[in-house]
Length: 456
Image 1: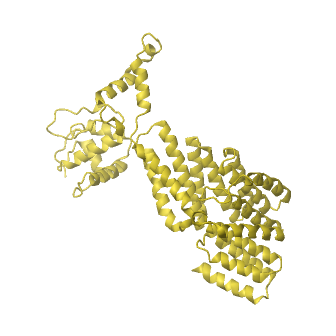
Image 2: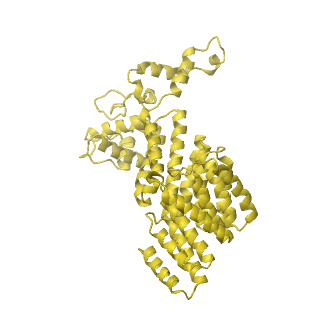
Image 3: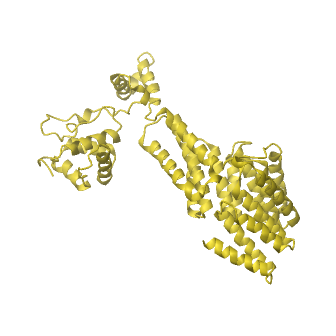
């Protein structure tokens, strides 16, 4: 396993310290880099073995291990000039390593392939090596120092297409959301979210790029929170909403935080936590850019939260604000982050059900169903349609028409997206029907159908 044993390897210990990794973490990094380098037949070193190399001066018999270790430290320390086994004190034929003076420079940008690396090192050495006192005297300050500051601020390892592809990916997930099942959506969204994490933490980027990465990370977490809501995974909803809110704060993108609260409010409402729904919607409204899609959605969220709380006066006031937006909205809106006039009408239907205004609930639900059913393919919203049909069922039940209620509910349950919100509304309707019409044979039959359907 080892070539020799001798005094401690100070050079190797230097690079271990500089990497900021524990021996266990370093062992995992080397294992991954061995795969990247094509050394698949090399046994990866255990953390204790790396410790022996540093403490006892051991050198592996297989020369590919020091090469892999040099590659790993070059990557972890962000060096432009690749380290060698000699630099790690792991080449018995070399005189001495150059570790302590090796420049720790960031990797060049993809577009800097033709740049002179000596100039970059000189510029950054100038920044790091210039005493403070001369910089305070204009006559003694160097313009090259200022130019080095500027150059350093734009250094990046991101490809020019990375951010554009992220934006396209987020837009595609949002636009096609309703056409796929939550379980189909989850892997793609989770994979993209982790890809952004990798870009944020393993690739050098400029401050502008950092903000954009944070914004896209936040939007992907909002999408994952919606998927978790559709799957009925409450803990995941809260975790991804929290992440989206944090990414929003860090990237200076308040609309991302507003969208996170839109999800949180919806989930709380369907989880029978109306006070939490109102709190989330209000918090989102506080940060949503004025007249943005998020602001419009949240204004309607506030209204239906008040309705769920049984506060008709507050509902009417909040609903009036939402309807002021409605007159300026398109009838159709495609995608997870769209806003349209019909959504506000469908929110009204739910609100009137909760407030006990059955006639108004039926009218609003029928209007929403009519529009949703007529939407062309790209604008279809199967979940919203099903919710409107279940609101109609609740209104019919309250108006003494159980058969009509069951018919509307069956239409909702025949839809293409039987997500958790639809399932919970259907259960709620079943309980209402049983309470109001305990002797009705059709109600009993519907209850059995629902039990079988939701157990599948």
